[in-house]
Amino acid sequence: MSETAGAGLRSERPETERSSRMPMAGLQGEWQRLHPLSPLVRAGRGAIAIVVVLVIPLSGKQNGLPNDLIHFSVLILVLVLGVISWLVTRWRVQDGVLRVESGLLRRTSERFPLSQIQAVDIVRPGLARVFGLAELRIRLAGGSGKAGRLAYLGSDQADVLRARLLALSEGVAAASPEERPALSEQALLRVPTGQLVVSLLLTGTGLSSS
Image 1 (cartoon, helix red, strand yellow):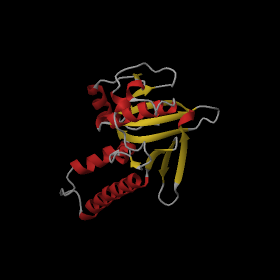
Image 2: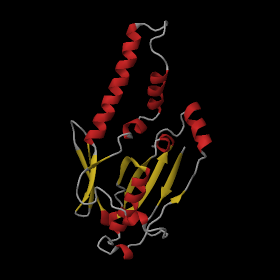
Image 3: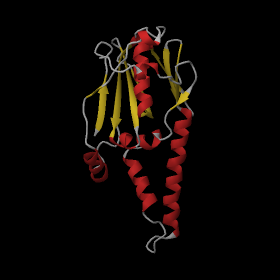
Image 4: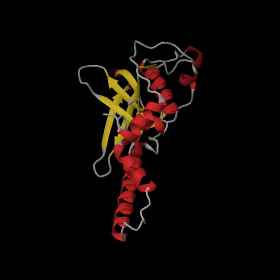
């Protein structure tokens, strides 16, 4: 289960000006990384297995030394791969273009011109909400259907970045803070915390986004 906020450029309603005025790293050309907990959230159901390995004692009488070593090795491997994934993924906004680079052996660089942004959505899958994270999804106008994502950012950072990207796409970045329109999000679905926790523990539903 997740909470999704959708925003088209022509469907925004004014709210407070806090998010549009807040300083935002990455908008002046400096590279930024995703939230350090991103690999854990993206692992989805695999994260539950990691928690089980951490919680259940591995040195019981029924477990031999080989099993303990296997469990420990798998845990270390997952953590190492997660850290590597986080280290090689970065984003920045420069010269009117949002760039997202990823990959270790084979680097990929995606470019999203701000002038072509049609909508910016915020998605909060179940496990991301537990850790206070959110995914930013960018959709471009035109028939290309190109879309990008930043998974994951801190929830507050995602809110601010979404507002700033929409403002920049409308060409208002050069306006004074008093003249900048504030942009808001509209939640499409809210899940009570109790139901969310039960879903995560019993079924694993909503742990990852598509």
